[in-house]
Image (tube, rainbow, N blue to C red; front, side, top):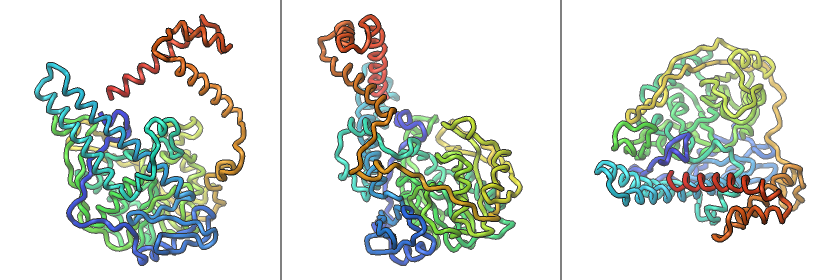
Amino acid sequence: MISRLYPDAPCGIIRCGTDGPAGRGLALTDLDALLPLAACPACRHAPLLAGPEGMRCAACERRFPVIDSIPWLFAEPDEVLADWRGRLRLLLEHLGREAALHRRGLAEPGLLALTRERLAHMAEACDEHAGQLQALLAPLDLAARQERYEVHLALGTPLPVSQGLTSYYANLHRDWAWGAEENAASLATVQEALAPGGPPRRLLVLGAGSGRLAYDLHQSLPIESTIALDYNPLLATIGRRVSAGETLELREFPIAPRRIADQAVLRRLAAPAAARPGLQFMLADARAAPFADGAFDAVLTPWFMDVVSDALPTMLRRVNRPLAPGGRWLFFGSLAWSDRPPSDCYSLEELLALLPEAGFSAGTPRETALPYMRSPASRHARVETVITLPAVKCRDVAPPPPPARPEWLERVDVPVPALPAFREQSLSTRVYAFIMAMIDGHRSVRDMALLMEEQRLMPAADAETAIRGFLARMHADAERRANF
């Protein structure tokens, strides 16, 4: 199924509603409201200027596109855009393979009528999803990427591995379809934490996803400007369109569907009302947030600090910079670390101990049991004990440097150094390519082992065992791709 290759979240089918087409550009008046808060993510503190083609830095002249009314304020926006195009192309290729896989299943003899119904339903859903997804993200200009599927798999992308287009996709349905109970509970918890200091005038939400919590706060509090920042263009695009008053239809693919119809159940996504002026979606890297120092009265990080790649002490200093003196940071979520060294898997006690060094004084944390991802179409649901921790900025701290890359990555005319890790990988890749090149439909494992010995790579007796293990893994991978 789709979710097996994208285990973080299922895919969905997207249909634009009939409320009118979304605008391709952002009105200058909207950009004007953003400009006092924004700063160049490349040269840091220089202001940004608005123009008919997007935004540009007043100092370094770097240009930042505005696509489907969403500014792309990355230090290297063209590179990030190319990467997302590659991921979209990979997803569309995958969906085509998924549809073909389900149709091949229909040809198997002796199927139950209900099994045929399920397979046909899923094949049609994959086809429809691919077409609608391509239409929704047409502003990304998919035609700009022409590499083969295999080439993209080999080269990958520099984006965070955890950030695919379908990452947190299930949250879209919770945010804008069936999650009224969960959304209301989250809103009430955050409002209670913000109440002692009163509502902020300027709110930044880092890791906003599709923006439902940012939308709810903006609608329920007298906030002048709310910036919903995320890394994922699919989440941001859908959040922007729905919060602007459009209606979208998407198919939800639950983790544990209750019935055959729930394998790909159609959902209607809509906001309670169009957002009032001042809510702006933005695509950017939170580790190099494109804002002026002290631009916001409050920064909210919902389910974010244990997901972003920077270590917690570093991210606390990054959160400090865009906050005004006396501004508030609100941690909301769990501390569920993954893929981190043990020293970086901080507890709540450690988080509290880190705050003074990062320029914050801590309020009183609360832990609240909240429903989480309780889709009515799925048997899979849970209750999360969520931490809500307010903190006040009591002093500026030196911001950490933005994520940096060596000169040979920044400039295409600088020689790439022969690093030890590169040399090791190069030898490994050559061995891999040599083994694959020996597969011609005629050579046996023994023949290949003798060639390995001739090349002085390893003795033939050892090579036979190693090659058999290698080919077994390759065969298993091929079977997995064919069946899932």
